[in-house]
Length: 123
View 1 (cartoon, helix red, strand yellow):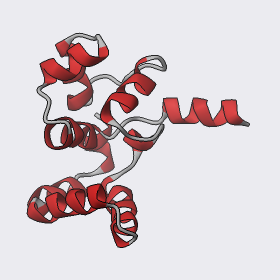
View 2 (cartoon, rainbow, N blue to C red):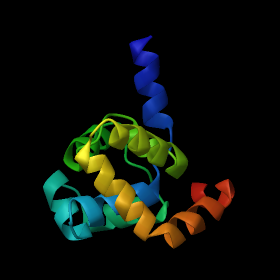
View 3 (cartoon, helix red, strand yellow):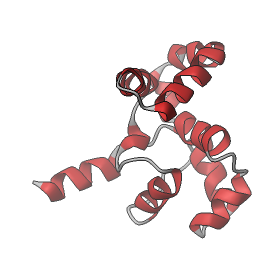
């Protein structure tokens, strides 16, 4: 069953908006810096963030470790991320509080992302 979970996580598309947020706001990396840290090309990072391609099964765990998130969390949608952060912040997680503060300050972006159709997100 564990193998099935790994396969389903790897085949679930990543949330490209969350990837960009983590890269820019949390790590404060450029695309070049992220690419260098995980030993891939800058074009590969660009393709992930535009939704043209997805990380493969070898790249995804390396990317998630570099971003400091749990396996499979790049596939979460914005509402799930905010819900998890709200719960974590309630129980004293300072990093979650900072992410919620960023989301509040950038609520126009959040509304825009939330308003996108699932069809445009999958592209």
